[in-house]
Image (cartoon, rainbow, N blue to C red; front, side, top):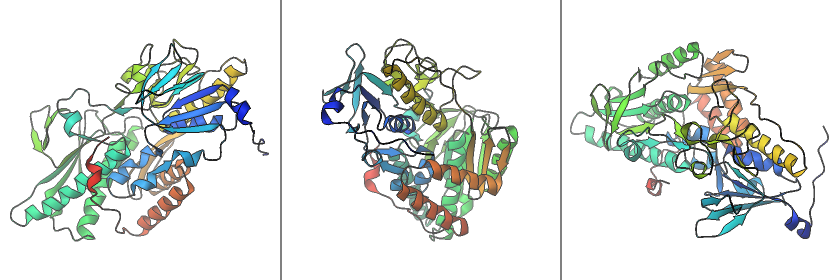
Length: 433
């Protein structure tokens, strides 16, 4: 297929082009900006970090399977050759929808003709006492580095304590969705390799990993056969799966369950869900959908706006039988592309079109050579075949050739062996975002 010629604009023409501001450099934001590249618009993408983070692999950074740089890529590098794209590394403090300006930290303002809010979501703690303060979420690169420090330090301290007394080391993962399942499996592998290959002097029987969820089964978005498979595989890896159990409190070194049990913990890893409450999307004028997401029309414009759009996890996008599309990376990517197309249609004087999500399936990995995948037509693939499918999909969507190559080499090596990885305790990672 022939590619369309690159559009060139003179500096004078560039200034006069309609200005689209995209807030957020995640899957949705990058997808939107990519679609607007070399189109007759000026685009400014604003992000609080100068890099894009590949969220599905954060758990591998947290469990020392990958380096932080393997899952992050500079946004300027992504759009370095696009003449109509400007990148701003800044924190957005607010949106003045009446004046059509984005207000940055420090007071600077960016005027827009169209605004796209792609600020994603953050961990939801469901108002459980102590959870926001003491539990460790896994939604940013800083979260992952901080959790890796906690896990490795806990193992080091446990070995020291074991020299003089018996040690009981408990890790609790809260949440039985893909992130919780993947994290629990990777944590089991981390402990296994630390003992077998790093010479960590700990009795494996003294280390306990619990995966807790209030739901009756794991991976509720998958068919029940996939849930049962995931549970069996985790239990083979010595992960205690406790379903139908809720958390009522988290302390700095313990977790309390609804049945009254208080369990001392080395770390409580929070993978129980996300929310847009407290993010920029929550501050926009207009009605909200579930989890604080801003309510949008079928074309992705805010219900009460003609030039403000919301995409990805920040948006409550109507269309599913139960009301709204789920907060998934494929939804974010497709909504970003669709939003860009609709902005161009509006600028061309054409009517907008409704967003339709094309479900290509969902995947989750349990551990090395074990994964489940539900394909678009409902077929479930599991085991090594599912694991290879999971690897291929994540490599495809990972941003940057260098990152793809490094991760591919890392995964290939780990398939045949289990080498020493980046099990480093880095002090500056203790500062959370």
